[in-house]
Length: 154
Ligand code: SME
View 1 (spheres, rainbow, N blue to C red):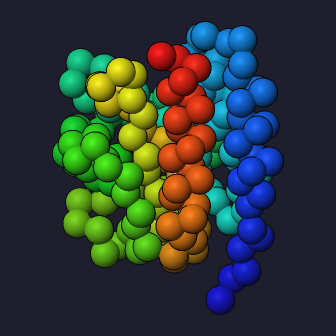
View 2: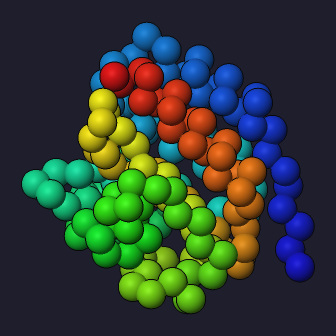
């Protein structure tokens, strides 16, 4: 079993808040947050954002290998998070019906919807090269990070 170095989410949330304070440009915010998360989370192989445009998800700022650009709402883990408006914690992507494999290394995944007002405008997506990388603690802490972004873009 691969050891996963625990994330200090209290510190990470403070770092996110100070990194994006005073900034209103969405792409700049998401670019820096994806870079910070990539630096801070152990055992991940992709972290980034998809944004809704013309009723589909389009690839946004990310760190990792090149990824699929278009994801239909309701498809894959990301599209499911948008359709259900609920975070998705996937222990084993191969057991998730319709999972979209952008990187063959990805074994587990967490996706959190991002809101502007009442509308879902995109998702945070993180992939890991090991099964069961993300716990409920990770999910809740990542939802808090997304809520810091939401407050900044509201
Ligand atoms: N696995 C995702 C697609 C995006 S990549 O992981 C970067 C999904 O099933 O929606």
